Image 1 (tube, rainbow, N blue to C red):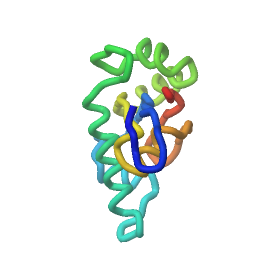
Image 2: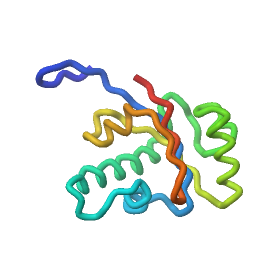
Image 3: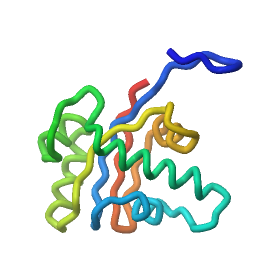
Image 4: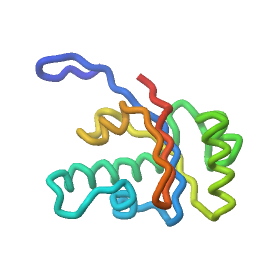
Length: 132
């Protein structure tokens, strides 16, 4: 448990799946998530993208998988995400799994505690595996 000024909070985390047409970098993710250069939140948005990339190097929370496979995706994220994985894999997309924590910055905290799916613009993000 972390104690912050004014309130007490528990840390949250979320496992995520990203399927990307190109190799995933913070700059590529920034662009694909729709952030614009020189926006007022550019610094926080880039920090979030870097945290997500770092999260792919940490692996999944509460699972021990070395690679992205249909069976692993199905076990963690369910049939819908696993089917999407197969569909995108056939198109040559690269698969990434990882997790973020709500302790990693404002936008990363939002990414972590929200539950969503993005399927457009050469990228698929499945982040509905929140752990509170």
